[in-house]
Structure formats: C-alpha cells, structure tokens
Image (cartoon, rainbow, N blue to C red; front, side, top):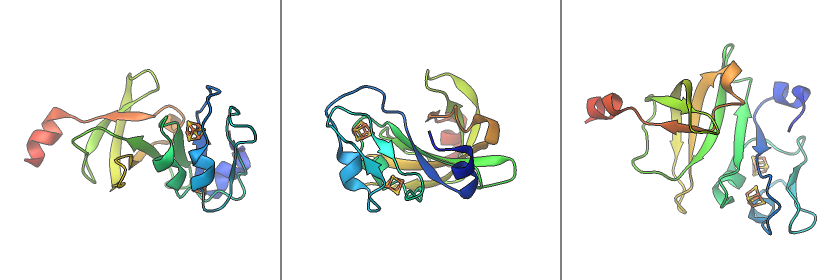
Length: 150
Ligand code: SF4
Ligand code: SF4
C-alpha cells in the first residue's frame, strides 16, 4: 500500500494480489521498472516513487488485481481506475453503481473515461467520493442509464 505522502502526490498503483501464485507479467509490463517480483511466487512490490499511475500494468494482470487511485483528482472526489472485462462497456459520463470487493453497492460513481485495451482488459476511470476510493473495486451498469443511452 502506498504511503499517505505518496497518495498526496498523485496517481499511484495499488496491488491487491495476495495469493502467492507464480505470476509476474505486471513487472515485465511496467515501463518505469517500478514493480518487482523477487521470486516468481512472491507478491509484487512497488517502488512508489517510480510509479506514475499510468495503469499499463493493469492491462497485463490476469488476476485483475491492480488498481490506480488518485486522491488529487478533485477536492471531494478521487479517481479510481479499475480493470473491466465485461460487455457492454459503460460510456464516459455514465453514472454507475460503485461496488466493493464483495460486489455490494456502496454508492455511485461517474465514468470519466473508458480505455480500450487490445487484450480486452479495459480500464475504466471512475470519479468516486474520496471516502470510497479504497472500497470501490468494480461497477454495475444501471439499466435506466443504458436504456436512456439507446
Ligand atoms: S501504474 Fe504504470 S508506472 Fe505504476 S506500476 Fe503500473 S505500469 Fe508501472
Ligand atoms: S500480474 Fe497481477 S496477479 Fe500476476 S503478480 Fe502481478 S499483480 Fe499479481
């Protein structure tokens, strides 16, 4: 987990990769060399000063275990980038249900950007209330929003 001081500086990656499985594509993908997986079964460790929150590692993680949080995004809102492999994709400006790690709705989020990835691990940028930045890890599209978008 990045330090409080690092969060105050801007976007940074968070690893929720707790199972010690033989895996390391995140480390190979980071253009800044910010991720280290010492032994193949180790959990990744992040050099938080090298990370700029670009999110490239997220698209290479088969476990969908990497997120980016930016507390400097707004006064009361934070930016949370989540990996997303469902279809349909949401659209920018869409309001969606914000889900926690258990899949429970904890509030509302606004989609800021949808970053398509060739390997289908897309990245959704969400604006969420700052107090939910450490909770929101997925989304659920709202039927009424989808119907309105047709
Ligand atoms: S967010 Fe970007 S800079 Fe940070 S660890 Fe991932 S790939 Fe590297
Ligand atoms: S790619 Fe994902 S699952 Fe694999 S070690 Fe990195 S964070 Fe963990």
